[in-house]
Image (tube, rainbow, N blue to C red; front, side, top):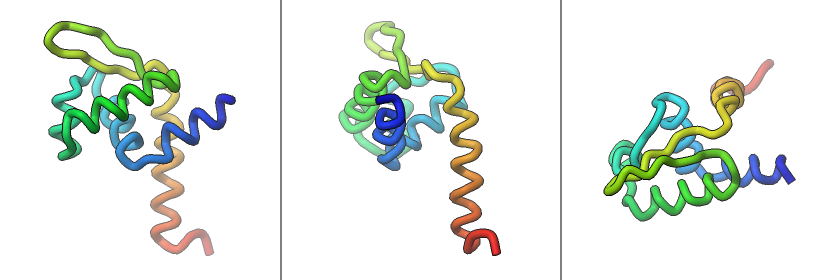
Amino acid sequence: MPDEKLARAIRSRIRRDILHILYQKERVSVHEIAKKLNISESSASKNLKLLYDLGFVNFENQPPKKFYFLKIKEIRDLFEVYDKIVKTLKQGGNK
């Protein structure tokens, strides 16, 4: 079900961070993502594969690198709302 795919994609902080990176840049390599998030390339690859399997990202293979990009551009809109909600919660919610 699409809503369960979305929930699974954004459940993990690392996957949310990866999606943030991908909506800020057109195409990003596994190496760039790993470096930016201070995680192993293996961890970045594992999470990118899951996002690919869920249908959120696609890739372009240019050996020796793979470049990932967002397949669903509307994820930017979702994260704008998501970030506003998180900020509101940090401030103690609406009173």
